[in-house]
Length: 295
Length: 321
Image 1 (cartoon, each protein chain N blue to C red):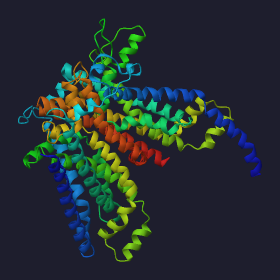
Image 2 (cartoon, one colour):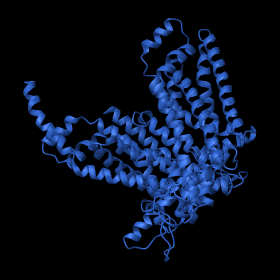
Image 3 (cartoon, each protein chain N blue to C red):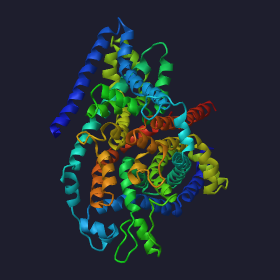
Image 4 (cartoon, helix red, strand yellow):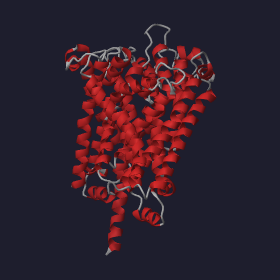
């Protein structure tokens, strides 16, 4: 019985698959992929052309007279007082604590919400979940006033603290989903062996939650590295602390036609997140899906 | 500050944080049997305190500030909100924002959906998806600069060549080069393209995962019943991934509401391109009108709340049925 069904369904399935693989789909996918890539490719090629050529001809003329140079990158990274190299360092200094601290705080909170018993737990979790809807814009000025009061204005601390706060709701949510799904037997067995919460958290939960931590980590890294609003609000006027995005936005305003600066500057800021993204895409997609689809 | 000093500060911050954390865990471990409440407080306290001080309390402060004047000292009632409704510049800002949240989510989702369906059927699926998804890794500022170059305009004079690809295409096709970013209202659409370029990858990724969850037998039986690929797509795939579609549309709407980087970098909000998020920034940090800035932030908040509630209700419904 089942054999006949299989035999009968096989040709139809093959037909179905063949009809699904349409040459039109391939052509359309190719066209959109090219359309999506050309803007980035054009600016990238421009960043490698000599300044005189950038200013007189389009990047497509490269194929007629190919000539490449690294001068634009050297100039934008190290030339002048406001060289991008300094902002690049700032971006790195901002991003590392801004990723690590919220992950640790959120996993502690997520563990408490998942495995500690106390009154009002579910209500409190709902409150934390709901607070995600508060847009960053609403919090900036009061936070800035607090930072001024604490004499932190214009330091890296403002950005580390602000990025940590804004990351917490989503981080707690994603990590809670994962940590709550750890089989109860594992936690119970450790408890019977006399392990306390701090021990269970460090030895069992943290190692098991690594995939979720990686997923959120990539997400948060891209978010912080690419942020403009929080950085402008707390470090907009402080070149010693401001990240790449702030400087690039300024360049775009004041040197709007100096494409040798803008193109190479843009790629200095793009290269790190793109490498992180391509290397860890698996985790990023997982984080994206955990943060959105499974809510 | 020198480079080593900067990294030193970051290490110091992490070290302080690490020491505090170890002490907290140690105390929690020591006292977990005698005082379980203390453990709970130690685990939850830091995150909850930060959320309360850094998000909940500021939100209330900002809503209150929206009823005060530019200096933040004198109560003015709903005057700031009336400005948003009555002032022609502000009317334009609100109108632009509405245009953004109508056009961007729908177009991004449509492109993402079509691409997800079609990319499933090509041999270089992974590369195809990565290329569309890549803009998600690029900052809005970077994306804005990339597209500003696409739109770059050079005066149409003998001896002058276009360096922006879009105007060059126009010239090749025998047309006149155009000012894409300064002529309204089309400049707003030129800015929306940047957002669509970024968000289509997000839509594609989430929808692609949802489509992969549609049972293959269902699609094949529809084909055997004589449904064409289009019918099959509309009658089976789309209804099956409805909740993912709602989610993508709402997530992009919220992202569009908050985005100001693209507008600020490309036009600075000039030429009638400003939106609420950009105007919030301009009023708050450039014109120091804290009352109007707070009102704009509150309106942004008010736009987001119903979208999130709708989203949650949709999921409740999906779960029950």
